[in-house]
Structures are given as C-alpha cells and as structure tokens.
Image (spheres, rainbow, N blue to C red):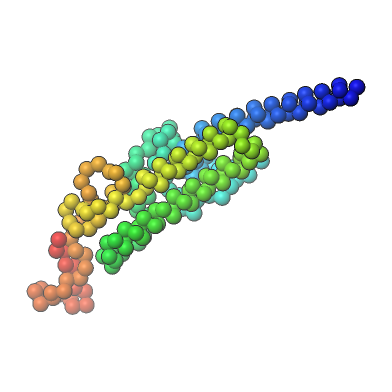
Length: 218
C-alpha cells in the first residue's frame, strides 16, 4: 500500500513538473518573440498607444522609459527600422549638443557618449527586469536560459552600435557624430563655420558692439 501511495505521489509530481515545463517553454518563446520590440521601443506594442511592458501573470504594467526613444533592433516592428535614422533621432535628444563650442571636442564627445550610454542602460535595465519578472518562476529552465542569452546578445549589439564615431571630420577639425562603424565620410554635423562672436569688431562697420556678428570662419 505504501508503495502504491509513493508511486502515485511520484506520478503526480512528474505531471506537475511536465505542466510547468510546457508553460516555461511557451513563456520563453512568447517573450523571445516580443524581445526585439521591447528593446527597440520599451513597450510591447508601439502602434497600440505604446502598451507598456507587463507582468504576464497578472497583467500589471511595469515601469517605463523616462523619455520615449527608438533603438535599432532587427525585426522589432512590422515597419522596417533603419539604424541611421534611429541613431540620428537618439542623438538629437541631448540638449548639451548646443554647447559644443563651449567645450573641448574630446570632452564634448565623452559627455555625448555618456548621455547615449545612459539611455541604453535604462532601456536594457527595463527590458531585463521585464524578462526577470516573467521567468523567475521557471528557474534555470533551458528555454529561459536561451532567452537570456538572446537578450545579452542583443544588449551587446545595442551598446556597441549606439556610440559616436569620434574620428576627425572629413571637412574640418571637429569630431564625427555618425554612429560607430558607419559608411561614408566622417561628419561633425555642423555648418563648418564658427558660431562664436567675431573678435575683430574693428573690421566691421555699423555694428552693435553688444551684439557682434558670428565669426563664421571655417
């Protein structure tokens, strides 16, 4: 009799394990399908009013990005994303770019990359937390581990791509603001004319000394 009870207990335990196994596989596959979109947009469905990332067990929304932005991630949307366009929009989020001529170029690039890196870290932390919340009940299941590897691979690609080139501009002495490993000439994204006030006011006539013209030399 004891043997029968033990056998039934073993059978039930394995049935429950199999149920959890199937759920773990389904959950990991579901998350892996959403992962590119989550990384690119920070939401589940960007076209549906930006539906936030959620706990799939209770439908509770998780935290969201402080500001909306799009990262280039392949297969993230039914509408194709383009790396140059995504990086250009990301680059324009930094207000400090207006102070370029007040800084040394090396300091300017360091600060700019620091801003971009902060956005990337925020998005990766958001998505990583979302994955953790939705897989922690399954422990070290092989499908969950494969999902986490895919996340890490995406993360490394995103971190490596969203960095300013920093090489010398092809037209001036400023540094290139294209994305790393870009094609074509290096471009500082300026007019190549000095925007600082002219220091040689004696060479100008009929000017307001309180509002001198821009230098505009190369």
